[in-house]
Picture (cartoon, rainbow, N blue to C red):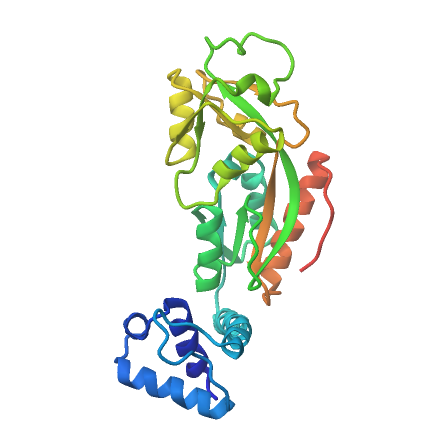
Length: 304
């Protein structure tokens, strides 16, 4: 059994169709079918139910798929890490969600560069879902995101839970009010959530906060990104619930009010490939904790 057998089988299982799997693999269908027959002969069991439309896996096939995926992820990780070790120059590619750019991420990157000027750091704005895909493809090395999704090929470290706040325009009824606001006071407001895609996203975290309080907003509008949501808030077209770090935008036509609800928090997650323990990543995590110490921000320290 060779790695190509695993790769071919996973493609067939995920596409549930030999023709589509062959197109995905850029090979002809007959050789793909022969490879699957060869794999079953090697294992001595049937992996695919004969004649099933759409294609269905046998119990053995489902077991094989569950273990083939992480093996392929490990091979991909090994390739990426070996390529990095073999390069003369040291690089670190960082993915981040837009809201972290208004918080402590710039401080963290500066701290890292001060300590490790020999490493070339590049930054790429992307959603958490896009970060997970980019990590697995090797196009970024670490992601700063907000989504608690499960993927065995990705390791996530919870850096901290950031409180959410509500953003309103200066003429809004809450703009002049002192103190915090409760979610129940917002259910009749036109609510702007972002990003519209890909989902799940921060938009789902906001809606989940309402759901945990047994509330349903009356009017929800999905917008493409944070900056559009804030622009619409400034224009008086709705309100938005955002992480408190977004207050760093200092928009003169937006007023922020704290949310009182105990569950109105958004996590900040440090995501890396499961096997990756490179010095660059360990040093980046150390830079995060160093900045948190300076700012007096509580956290639970973890190591890679």
